[in-house]
Length: 128
Image 1 (cartoon, rainbow, N blue to C red):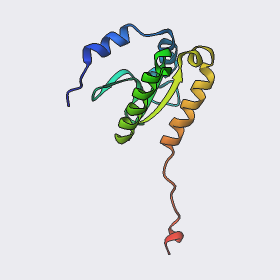
Image 2 (spheres, one colour):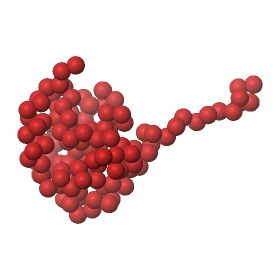
Image 3 (spheres, helix red, strand yellow):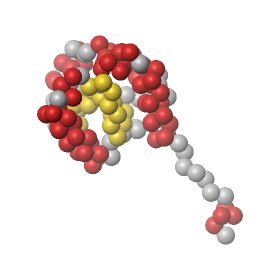
């Protein structure tokens, strides 16, 4: 399947915000709870800031435009469309990333752990 927006993704990776740079520094190379993330990953018409395909987890670093009425409406639609694909979305504002990266990491780690918990194995006696 050919992904859309490849050139735009490359440009966004090259021109990261300070918050994106800081978040990427903890997400790259499976450094956070072993989750593999990609930057500026295209899915359909959307470009996700950070995406873990194996966990179907998207992390967005939101600047000020996301808190205006128009931005909030677009984000709601985007969240619903991604949920239809089974993708969970976590949003953090840039200020939060820049001033509380440990708290941001804790939320991401908890979410990743929930997604990677092995299924409960029932003892055979339970089926008798």
